[in-house]
Image (tube, rainbow, N blue to C red):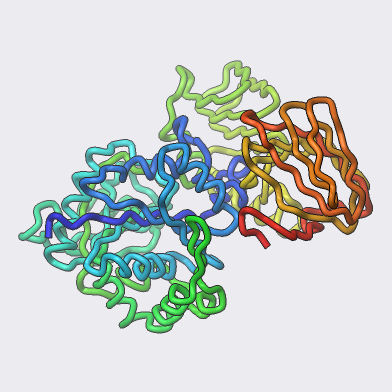
Length: 476
C-alpha cells in the first residue's frame, strides 16, 4: 500500500476579495506573485512535484481563469495536466467530488490531496513529512485526514480542530474530537492556552473510495449530480467541462460540513510548516520581509518616518510621511488606504463596488486572454484606445462587431490581418481599418510579441459586442 501515489487536487476557484485592489475576480490572488517571483498557484504545484510521491496534479478552476492557469503551469513545466472547469462555484465538497470521480476512472483505489491554490507553506520539508503521515493513515487505515496548523497566537479568522486520542498505529496522527467554528478572541486564547487545538488548514488527504462513500451517505444528491456532470462532460485540449445542467443540480456545501463533521473516520496530523492562507493584507505583512522600520515596501515608494506599514505600488510613486500601521496599495486604476487592523473589511469595499455597478473589482487595466493581453489606455463615450499584445504564433477569433469600428496600428512585430475575404500582412508603422460589421481576425505569424494600438469608435464599446465565427480556444 505504501507504493500508492497521491493525486494532488488543486482548488483554484477563489477571488481573494480581501486583497483588493491587487486581487480581482478575473485575476485573483492565486495567479499573483505575492510572496516570491512565482505566482501562488505555481508555488503550490512546486510543493507536489516529486514523482515518487505524487501523480500529475488535477486542477479545479473556472472558465475565466483557464488559459491564465494553463499558461502559468506551462512556464513551470506542467503541460499535460487536466483542468476541470466548474460550471459554477458550489463550494469545496462538489469540487472535490468531481475530482474524486475523475480520479476513480483510472485509479479507483487511489488517494487525493485536496489543496487550495493560494496558501503559503514556508517549510516544504515539514509539509512532506506530514503528507507521509497522512498517507499512512489514509491508505492503511482508510481514514479521512486533514492537517492542523500549530497555532503561534490566538486567531479569530480560522476555524479550529480539537485533537482526540493518538492513533497508535500511525505516529504523529490523532483522531479528531471535534471541529470548532471561528472563535471570538477570548475563546481563541483559551484554545491556544489549553493546547490540543489547531488551526483548520483546509487541506485534506482522502482515499478516493472512502470519500465517495461518505458523500453517498451524507450528500446523495451531490453525488448523483456530480456523477451525471462527469459522465456527460466534454473535453477540449487539457480542459474537462462537466455538464452544466447536471452540476447545477448539486447542493452547495463544504468538505468540513459535508464530510469531516459527519464521519467517525476523521483524523488530523498536527504540523508546523509555516502555513498562512494570505487572507488579508495584514496576513501578507506578517509573512513578508520588513525594513528597519517594520515596513513592507514594493514598487516606487518614498517613505519618511513611516513605521509598520505595507506599501505597494504597481504604477505611480507613493510618498508616505509619518504613517503608522497602514496598508497603502496603488494599482493603475485604484488606491487602497486601510488601517492594518481593519484589513478583513476590504471585502466591504468590494461589495460596494459590485453594488454600484463599477468594474474595478472585476479586472485590472491589463486583461489577459489566451492569445496575450490588452490594456485600455484611454476611453470616453464613443471611443476607446487599447494596447494589444499578441504572443508569437497566437491568433484572435474570427469575429465581428455590431456597434463599433476599429483601427489597428502595428507598433512592433508583424501582423497577419483578415478583413472579410482579404488577408494582408502589416509591418511596424502600418495600419488598417475594420468597418462595423466586417468579419476580421488578427494573427501573429512571427517569433516576437506583436504590439498593436487599437482605436475603437462607435455607439457601444462593451466587450460583449463580439460575435465569434471561429475560435482556436473554444470560446463561444
